[in-house]
Image (cartoon, rainbow, N blue to C red):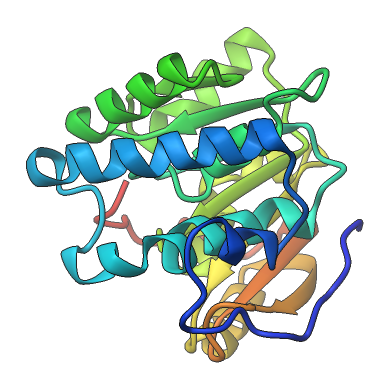
Length: 236
């Protein structure tokens, strides 16, 4: 798997583009798109409730820089599927980083109509290589089976337990995609639970935003013969 692990945390007082530059290099076009993206989040926040209001003052570090960690962990991946995209962290962040990369493309899955409309607006206004699918995650594998869509990476942030994420992304992970998931302080327990139902290889990368978080990369996924389907998750 590609990507370098950096040990330094992004300072809690880091703001603006500096917080994102601490994660990975940016060119002028990326910087302009990130500034426009944050402006759109702030503009739409009062009516769309895109992010927790308490995190808005720290949006560059808590959301943009944090979202950039997904791409930084697997920079060779060009075709991304982002599940439960919400306000676009990390999906739209990845799309901005791939905007001028030949073959770069991000599919964002978000069932909430208001948030899906926001994602579409950002993708259109910033001319991003992104498409928005406003459907429930359960319907996506069958849809993409018909279209033949393939992905290099599947990302998700604050969506579900590892066990459920593997089930949601099974169609692509078993076909060779790598899962790139933001996980929190309960991850050790999640990993043990997932191992009861799945065989997989996993690499943990320490988050540079929160000391008790990490970015996990999962591949070579296979459902164990005795595994059942995980419980339905409320957030899709």
